[in-house]
Length: 91
Image 1 (cartoon, rainbow, N blue to C red):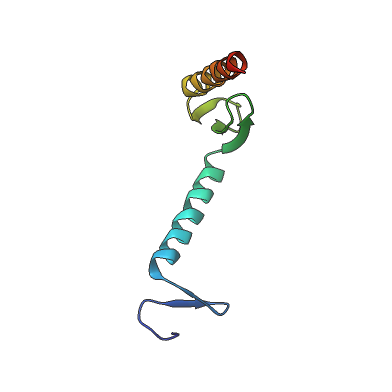
Image 2 (tube, rainbow, N blue to C red):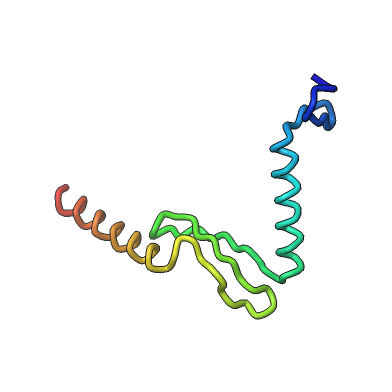
């Protein structure tokens, strides 16, 4: 209810104190990333059947971090190929 301690009302919706803090933290993170010239790229690797998230330096294009790592993506691709061979041979 409006007026309850620790509750914020925004556009007719109640917002718990934790949600307000989360939104503020996300806004701060996004601002910091913009100031630090860091970009986030999302890619889908069809062969590995996984989403890849890369954090890159916007100015230089240098890869800072990739999730999952390149090693994990390679393992996933190899397992996919092995699974395909196994299914092909048993059919």
